[in-house]
Image (cartoon, rainbow, N blue to C red; front, top):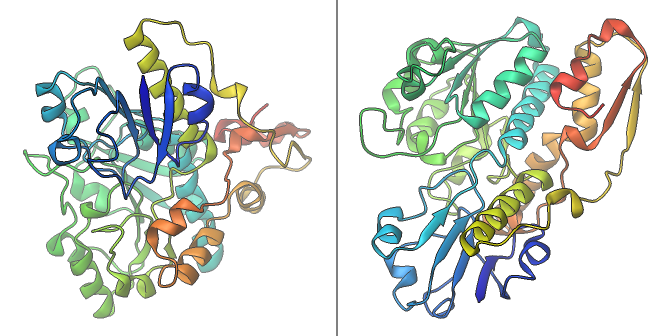
Length: 372
């Protein structure tokens, strides 16, 4: 069995070595000729899997994307060809939530903002929005959830607000899939009209899909002097982004919010398990077999947990300013894809054990995801 996989899938060679002959490829450069004899194709979000890519292939039986988004996959075409498909919902949800938290910590320090005094509107309450909600709850930060689809689901008992209510919060964090049709389509969800309604000094964070915001309209209101604070991890037309927008952002990164080692590797593990099910074999490998020991093992907290300690703890694990600096320095020299391909290893909170020697800390670090 010929298994082709994106070279940026951590531990793919380890997981799939026993299942077939492995070939790694560059996700942006993959062509129809490259995979003409593939039985299994494993991709990430930068590879569009459609009829054009698969036109020369007659042997494909399984396609997997190690991502939560599926807008790069022509699922109808795969179904017509009876090719099984699997995505990795929730694999990097924790990573994205921690990216948002790091951004909030950095902006709070930069602008002397008290986090506990903010209201956060989470637009999209699936896996990622839910993980962010849990971390904000741990910090007692007020937030609301907006998700019209889940709001109509009688099984989900959470309270939901309208989009207009969510967009009126101090912080708006976007976590929706990219959809282009239907009553809840998210393409240009924030268009010129909605962007114009933002108040001065609100914070807008986009760590889902670039096309959810009309980037040209966003640039226009910023050029007109709007003081909306921007955190952009995703951009329209990646990798050929609207570079003029960078100067107007507080934090800019190259679609790496979900790029923690754990987040990417969970996607690999999910696809491995799915392929094993298709082959009717028992999985005998798991992610913990391959994750390295964290450079920082254990931290002891001997004081009451407060926002200063939160700032120190979060940035000790992940300081988003590093990725912002890399982006600004390299985007016009190395390019968007190079930044992603050479992304330094980043760990999640769970890679570090936190010991509490003060009962008044109320276990906040562990609620945030740090290991006990």
